[in-house]
Length: 194
Image 1: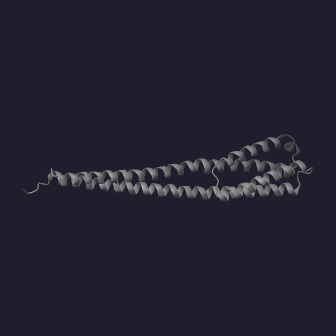
Image 2 (image 1 turned 30 degrees about the vertical axis):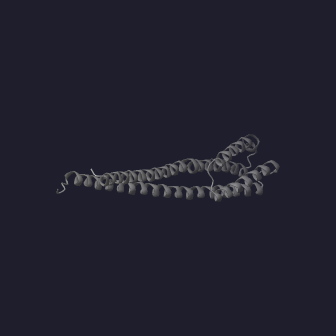
Image 3 (image 1 turned 180 degrees about the horizontal axis):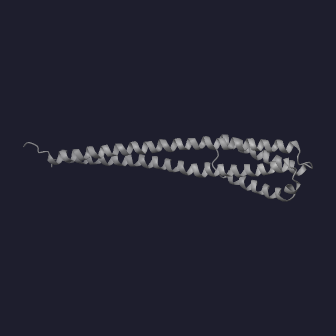
C-alpha cells in the first residue's frame, strides 16, 4: 500500500471515529437534559405542589374554625397546625424556585406571619382581619400552584425537545451506519483494473 493510500485510510477511519464520537456526545447531552427535566418535574414541581396542597388543607381547617368560632381548635390544635405549616414552608424553600415563584413565596410567608400574629392578638376569632389574612394566604397558594403548573409545562417542553433530538440523531446514526455498510461492500467487491 502506498503512503497516500494509508493516509486516506487513516483519514477515513478518523472521520468515522469523529462522527461517532460527536453524535455520542450530543446524545449524552440530550439524555442528561431529559433526565434533569424529569428529576426537576418530580423534585421541584410535583413535591412542591403536594406541599402547597398540604398548606392549603391546613389553611382551610383554620378558616372553618374561624367561621364556626371553634375556640377548642385554637386552644388545642392551632399550635400543632402552625408547626406543620412551618415545616411545609421549610420543605418548600428547599425546592428550586423561579424568580416569580420566590416573589409569591415571600408574600405567602409574610402573610403566614401576619396570620399567626392576628391569631394570637385576636380575642374574637371570627375577626374579619383573620379571615382576610386567610383569604390572602389562599390566593398566594393558588398563585404558587399555577406557577407550578406553568413550570411543569416548561419542563415537559424541554424533555420533549430533548427526546426529539435524541430520536433525530438516532435516525441519523442509523442512516450513517447503512451508508457505511454499503461503502464497505463497495470497497470489498470493487476490483480495480490493473
